[in-house]
Length: 393
Image (tube, rainbow, N blue to C red; front, side, top):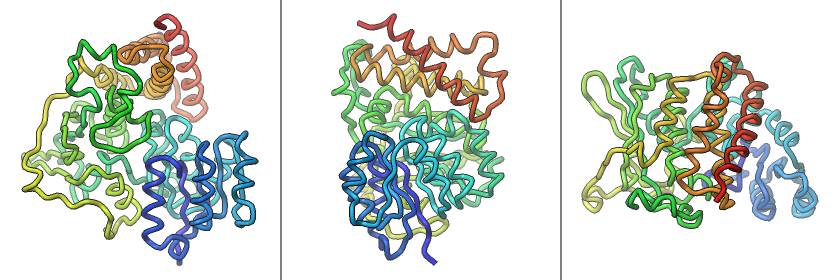
């Protein structure tokens, strides 16, 4: 029996790599594609839906509905648009769901998919950061498996196969350092969105590439590690690894350190989640250790990358602090891309928002429910806008 597949965020970098693997593994002859979702790249979304003979294609933007419907005319693929359509797509039962919508926007479809799916391949790290306990409890209630798709967390997951989590002494996730890893720290405030949007190793979308340069992406991954694996924050660390060949390491109480190596290609992690518990042939480069020659590491300086310090504060505080952290980070990123604030001011915005919303225990004394997560998300974005207004240059 063919597996039913849904891909949220099909036209993004993770989605495109997922579609590539599905196509290479037989496409519509091997899978029943229930739904694909995308953003404003309507031509590409329609092309994917036609090629995979999907039942439904959804654009997140209602104003794009007519274009999508026209692009799918005569194909037999149903067209839909808007947040409600995304939720309706998530309510359609699937055996394997890729959750790769960027940002907090991926939380609600992912939560709904957990109630109707078998396996959720989670590339939307924001879901665990903003609502980790709720997400995991929902998966347990509905007996849905969550498999990590971030390269770092897939690496940790693979290193833990057959291991006792209680034997883990430390987890080290690696960071490339992004576009500015070798810049003098005093030059960072002059960095432009164009400069921040060029990654030295990975081919990714603009937002995650800028997050890599600021290390906010790694900050989210530190929190994600704590939430997904249940590992104490003090056992989680990040190091800068310029080659991006080691994605994560797990250290055990006997002193052993297990590393996951692979070329910087997201199809490693996606393919592992797609074929789990088996391994399948993947079209990724094989490492030549002699040609590689050496691997380098350096400390992840929290003065250069204050996002890492803020992540540790979020992990220590718990509650809804992660929701405020993520929302203010997204708002700060928007402000930087819009040239309202400097590169170095993004962390200042996030820190100011956390301080404002944390007063009187507002983030730690409140139940973690979907309604409260979305409420804090809204409050954090409003507060971030006020902070940005005071910083605009």
